[in-house]
Image 1 (tube, helix red, strand yellow):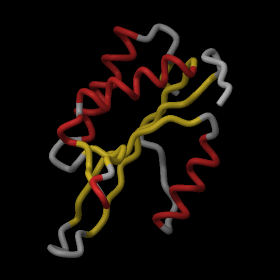
Image 2: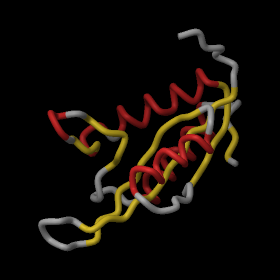
Image 3: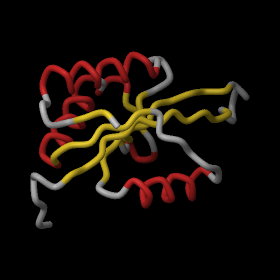
Length: 120
């Protein structure tokens, strides 16, 4: 894969609410990730969940910095990432961590570590 580390990429947070089949409880988890095409990513999520989604927060910057930001979030919240089928680890922070805590963490990292990443 040939990538230019200076190409612009987006880092997103998305809150997803769903009903737990076992308890009928409404659960809210935070999804995060990176993309070079927000429209394509949004279409993909909407195709999986069956309804329109809205990004909760977006940042944009050079690919290398965006990838490093994602890596840092995964490391910081590793114990709270959702495990799925065959122990696959997803880019979802479980419901025990409030969205605002994750968003504040990202904002601090951007402000203090990544000079070229800007909030959209």
